[in-house]
Image (tube, rainbow, N blue to C red; front, side, top):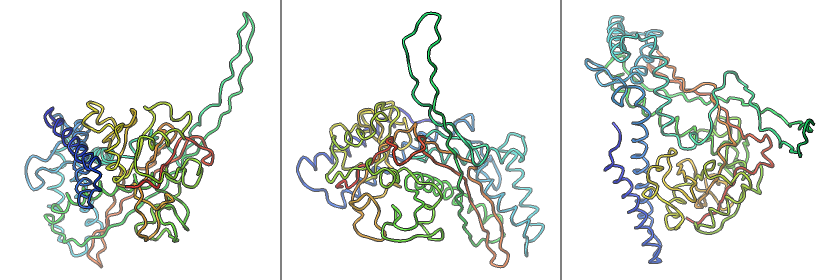
Length: 443
């Protein structure tokens, strides 16, 4: 089922109302109260969720004839799809490997019920095919919700590391003469290596061996997996920094691979923000003012030849910068975008034909564009512009879910992992000009 014309119009009108309200506050020269900013931030989130719902309906149509995945029609697992069943099956497998004091009859009944439910969602194909379907279904959910990852060309890596060709050098042209061979151009060629890095999360939870308890837990496990995978992928693509001391996300501190909540930034590659903040600081600009049309034009101008085609570009902003930008006339919000409103995931506006993506993983920073560790000075907005053709995102392994059981603690332990790589195409970050950043934006 897709969104109706009336529902799409409702979304557009809601964005228009938010924009008009905020502009009225600006015109009256009354600084918005903190509670008003919070309300606007929530409104932005709600509108984004409505947009995602429409995109998800379209993407998931491939898994069913009526725009939904096949679901169990009856019985204990009624309403679950293949991915829900996969979570339950993973727990069952761990119980069978480490049964502890489990009743064999209970596990046998559990397996029989689950097998029947799986058969009902795979049209008689058998549960041997469910693994493929569940992986595709889970990854579809994640792809719908990612904002930053969906901007870039994806490479499925057959090996690790995996080499891809870089751009060829310039071709020389000469006047032609009849029956005369022209001078050939020796093209400069090179290759860049994508090296996949692993992200792993381990979550234990206490659970009885009762099948009904696992069923009740399945929906929460699934939603948590998708939400956390989306957050960490976008987070590392934006914020990854291999530096342990004065990391761009923890300036003024030293973090380690064991630091909870921060270790993932040390994944093994540097992200988008690292380029203008560290690698080529000429691509960063201290805006030191509120949002304006010049703010967008100025940062785009730093891209040079890479900033010519709007179709290749994207702005990425934090929520505060987006809200403040509603007062800029050139900022075309969702109500004016029409059929282009869902061109990219998370797009709520555009400037001069360039989509503006709002990412919750783009945090507010200190005045120098970096996030001060544990400080209260992270109040400034940031606006990143990137040429999407100049970055490559590789996956050696998509999300893998494994479950084991600790019989001493009577816990189920779910281990979730993925292997991904991220690189820019020129091969020399210190001179790359395809990505730029405005920081120290007053929001």
